[in-house]
Length: 137
Image (cartoon, rainbow, N blue to C red; front, side, top):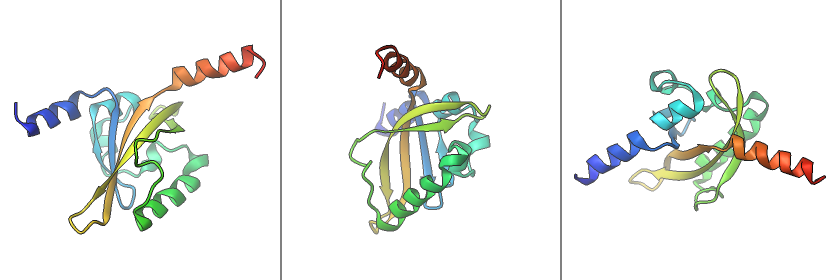
């Protein structure tokens, strides 16, 4: 199996969501993990804004950070750090996700897109909340 075949198999089979958005925040890549986690088929998500998975109350803050990252090419989440945030599914349910990002630069070095690798951590998040309540914290 060559490198391209391995990359394709990884992309298709990974359980985590792999979502790539361009400079304007339009979804350009959406894998099967993203379909499973968020409920949108690839054809429904491609060409849409990241707003389809961003809770309305958080959109302004999200876009301020996203635009700053695209403008400066800098992010504090690009070195493998995990960011935990709420997200929304197609059915409107709120979930908790953790993600890291990979900045994608063009040949000129300018930031062209951002790839996010996301995992649904809703069950873990809810369990931690239950444990904190149980111990009085």
